[in-house]
Image (cartoon, rainbow, N blue to C red):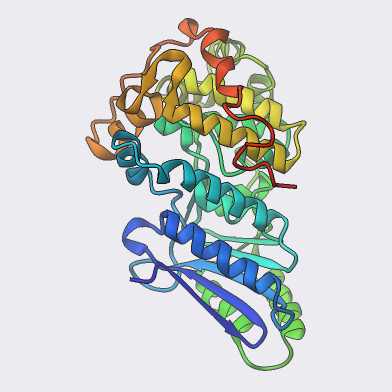
Length: 365
């Protein structure tokens, strides 16, 4: 099956992710295909804009993209398949391409939009969600960190919401994601097919249809939901160290604080520390530098040499095992508690195994 369907209709490049059985999880082939299409269209003067959507088992909309293919990550690490490293190199190059795309790039973020799905939508010039969107960066669920540019775009959420979302993996509705600056417009899912048809139609010039499309999005937009954003988020997640965040949350007896503590208690103490440091550093980094940092981090996630952990002994492979392989939801994190995590465990994740010129993403500008 062709997992990436592309066509050009009257000056608009149209991409459909077509792997509904896996909620359009990105494989290496899909990443390479997307990069090839987008680079070709960027160089084609006849194409004025690009739109991307994801199929669902029930039709052309319903889910955008659940992220990278974590089952492949698990198998590739256990079997030491070289394509694992290549996947992340090519995925981060694709993220960079989209953030810097030379033409309007419109992402229809309907349904599940998580992890890698955020990486191919957050750089869009127009990010459209619906009331059924589920937007999240849930990487800490599997002992990973918020990658695909997460350390770049999460700090651009208001206040310290980015740290909150990156550490907890909290899922937002479409209208909630507006308030987090992770979407531009929310429209009712009953309208989304009409909007796609409008941009695809053959009536008028592409530039005219794009303007009409934008007007249609504005006219059918839903209001944002900011009720979930409270001062408690900033009070807790402004802190530089994870123990400070936990202490702040522990001093509160609100339902939100208790729920947040419960979420954090299920995550890898080691990788929460790595993730927090990544997001804090990302506040001061360019996209290219942050993606280079992510490529360094993800290398250490699957080859944690400084802790002498490889394959199934790494936090990431253990997290994937617990969530999607054995599905016991009981990862054996090491160390088990936040108090046991030391700087000597965390800081080497940020040391590149490559020289500057040899880095896989050295060419990103």
